[in-house]
Image (tube, rainbow, N blue to C red; front, top):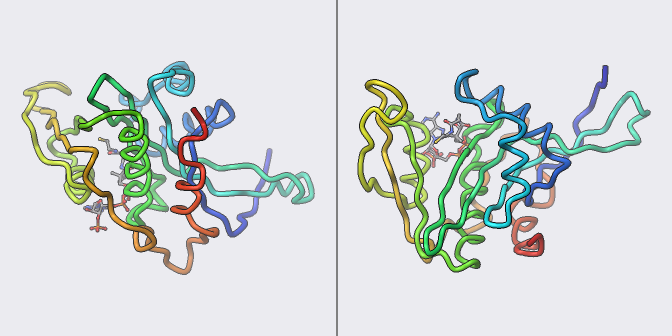
Length: 201
Ligand SMILES: CC(C)(COP(=O)(O)OP(=O)(O)OC[C@H]1O[C@@H](n2cnc3c(N)ncnc32)[C@H](O)[C@@H]1OP(=O)(O)O)[C@@H](O)C(=O)NCCC(=O)NCCS
């Protein structure tokens, strides 16, 4: 079994094929068994030309290899699809231990910037009406309710469709990510995002 020790780094970037296992693993801590995306679904997200996956990763060192080998542990993710002038936001998730720190806010902001750079004018999303946390996250990011899809997730489980113009500014850095003492961060989630920008197309 592989054991690992944390190193002081938390960074955000576009995901690649090497993140597949981490994304699938994160699913199991963020969604119930009936709601999880499969590995093939995530592979399609990583492969598609019209979409981008953003991840926040924590750098770990493999203690079994004498601490020499570093690997990225995926701790948060979101997907953005392009559809003409619309962009769609999917699968926003943050590992339970790192919630409430602004990580999802940062990744969605990155997705908005990417969508804007690719010509989108509006971003849409669907969220279960009773997911108070996610609806609050999206409202804080400037999304407003557009309409309701009744029974979309099953009887009595409506979907709220929310939208936001992508041209509006996203929250400024560096106040986005709140960092309590027990959550190590690297040189900056936000600067990493903007340094990498659109180079991964
Ligand atoms: C929803 C989720 C992605 C939020 O991730 P996060 O990294 O904790 O989000 P952030 O720290 O960026 O929080 C931003 C905002 O979300 C809201 N929020 C976060 N945690 C919250 C909580 N426990 N209760 C209510 N609102 C909360 C707040 O509006 C918060 O802004 P504030 O801190 O200024 O009040 C995370 O809770 C999660 O993974 N949930 C399970 C998967 C899921 O439901 N995804 C959404 C599917 S549509």
